[in-house]
Image (cartoon, rainbow, N blue to C red; front, side, top):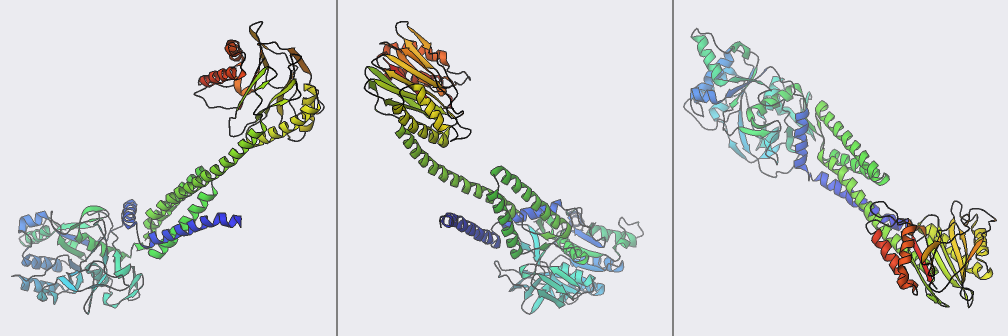
Amino acid sequence: MKLSRFRAPRYYIILIFLCLVVLFSGLRVFARYELITYDFRLKLRPPLPAMPEIVLIEIADDTLHNLGRWPLPRDFHASLLQVLTEFGARIIVFDILFSESSLHDESFAQAIEQAGNVYLPEAFSIPEGAPATYGPLVSRAVLGPIVPQLEKKAAGIGHLNVLVDADGEIRRLPLFIQYQDRRVANVGFLAACRWLGLDPAKAEFRGDSVIVESSLRLPVCANTAFLVNYPDTWQRSFKHVSYFDILKAYYDLKNGKPPQFDLKSLKGKACFIGLTATGTSDLRAMPLDTIYPMLGLQASVFNSVVRQRFIRDVGVWLNILIAILIFSASLFISLKKDPFKAALAGLIMAGAFFTLSTALFIRLGIWTDLFFPLALILATYIGVMAYKFIGEVHQRQLLEKELDIARAIQQSFLPKDVQAFQGLSIAAYMQPAKFVAGDFYDIVVLDDHRLGVLIGDVAGKGISASLIMAQTISFFRIFSRQYARAGEVLSRLNAELFGRFPGRFVTALYMILDARMKTVSVASAAQSPLLVYKEDENRVIEAELNTNVPLGIMEGIDYPEVQRFIAHGDMLAVFSDGVFEARNDEGQEYGLQRLKGLMAQSQVSKTDASLALERIKKDLSQFSRLCPQHDDITIIVITA
């Protein structure tokens, strides 16, 4: 039950984020950024081969300079059609709206009829936020109709509407628009079908495809939105010819002059005629160019359909599935690996997905979301690391509470009330390097004139050391009352500790002070030295002890003891190695010599051990104030 209660919140969080992944992907929250990655992949792709049969006949600046202002008189269009017809153009597509009557409509209509292969466009009003359907986009109004006189003579009528994405670029268009009882195909698509000998009126709509006479399948999105597969930039894609140059070449040919343009090159061509002059309204932005004439868009549609080179949007559901798989893989890696390995694996996964997605786009024209999956990898990693961090903080808080309890328990093992005994002044201090210490000390009253003082250090730090410390003190309190000699007490402690904690040992120093005999008996188990200040000699000496191996390492060890006399005004001090091994910011150790010098100076407090102890603590703190404490510190001072 405890395990399930602990894990339940994690599962709820994962389920919530999984729902968010589906929601964000399904609602196309990052659609604008996906368009950026679409453009990026389109630019990485090598240029598509453009049909050599496609010729763009531009009404550019030179044409308007030589023939007059826009719109050009329609007798020029009639003349152009006569030239194209005479020299064998196979299909002629106008990317120009002829919505109003003019003086030369009759001659233009005759030229259209004579050519028999001219396709004219019209424009429809497309409502914003039109409901998504699997059929044609529905329009309720015609914005740019065709003059009836011209419409009757055209080989076909198509629309030139486009769909503008949120960033203002043209990436797609509706293949069909339904207006009343008419279903109007895009003019470039219409011309391509006729080039292939197909009738777009026989198109069928099947989900994400438009099928024409069972031989042509085009991938589409809702409302027959078709991704325009631009071969390249405006200047580098199709063959460009000036409208004026064609008329002038024909004029020169008729007047016996060598033409600058070979009109025979128009034979069998698909000619797209449109306005490309600077500053005109027919220039829009597309993924490969910021200024791109829509004449090139119709030619790109024609090229894509005839060559059957399409870009396929995999659609919402497959993108959702990809997002779920990416999220699941990222989540698994981030939860199972440490932060560095998870970050590395995330980078590898992101690189692999980027490479695969780009390769599918370049090689097969398959467009999948890229920004959201990559962002999902990063967001999942950050989210899991934040979750782990919060969990670690929570665990640390629990651990700190447990360590506080352990510290309180450890403190309860230390003596609190022994500050004076039969004329002796006693002061003790212990500061763990961590929450709990491996250092320990104890002061026990053995009888009315004898006092036992123990100081020790368990190898290692932390909880395990504190537990060994607690057991050592427990044994000491028993043996200190059973055995009168300091060496015997240490021998009994060694016997009890041997074999209990493999690989661990305890250093200790035990001294028995006899206030009646004015003596101190000391036995050492590899513990740091005993420093004695002799008032009559005004110097600090290091007591010569018969140190022996630490407790718990070898069985059957005897610990001999040394006895010294103490007089009024003498001071005894014992320390753990955390005192004299303390370092400053220059890496220097505090050292025994500094301790000896400080004890010699501290005789202003010769009758009060607590004042002497405070002076030692203050000096030690000033020495190592810029450096962290690396070991437990224990100090016991006794003045006679």
